[in-house]
Image (tube, rainbow, N blue to C red; front, side, top):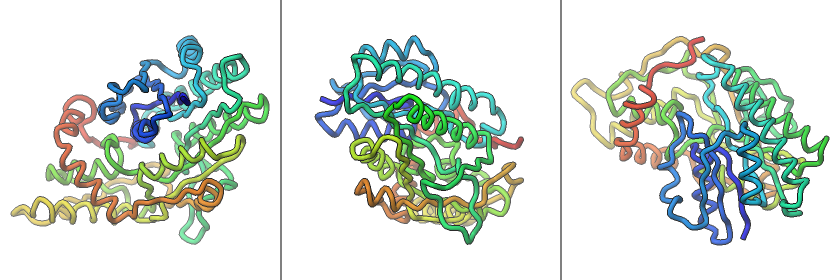
Length: 350
């Protein structure tokens, strides 16, 4: 039975990966998460009762903890999701992003390398580092989408910290021979995403009849990828990818933020009805743009399709509709987050 150690497995994408992996009866999962503000153990949907699942509350930057966990479980692969991820928060507090995404990742790599060099690791061991398209900077309207060979040009503290971690992983492969892979993905959406991100934030606010803050003119374009499609790609990269390679995953759904917000409003109007004040698009409020806001992202996923046999299954229209319905039904969960952890307020003003 293969054992996969997942870091950050209580996060949005990490938990989706664990849900997928546990469907394979030949896979055992060890989840390491420090349970930061955005962690959602509920998103594991009963994994704790599965005999093929183990959890450790630990920080990937704690070398002693990681050394012990690696020695105890002897994983055949490590999939690294652990990171600070929200651009707005990186603007307000960049040092936390440098500490986790750079410093802690480096310490994790030190321990994983020692484990791999020792007697415990399988000959087929892999280290998969999950990154973002934001490391590539911004595209103009006429530029070709990002691909694996695109030069790095990060523009936010978050993107810079992820770029640095990517370079560290590449260095550990080149210098030490650690069998590592890197993946970059476009904007993910789907169930269980923490409501600081655009889609769940707008759903929560629109349902509550609150103002919907749209940054700048709202014409920033993102390429949307359903989280379930993304984690299928990660599983394929783990099973079929080659050490030292990079694989990029995109959804092929480029849309402006304003279009997304209006679509959410229209869907909730149709689902819940329009109040006496009128359609929810009236709640849209243009606010000062995010400092350094990248104008456009898009990914060319041809390499992943060609070499891994991967392709997205969710079309964005139906995927978004199902996602909105999920959040509308998850009002208790959203309410607890709003009351205890994040009041849906504006972040990242600089």
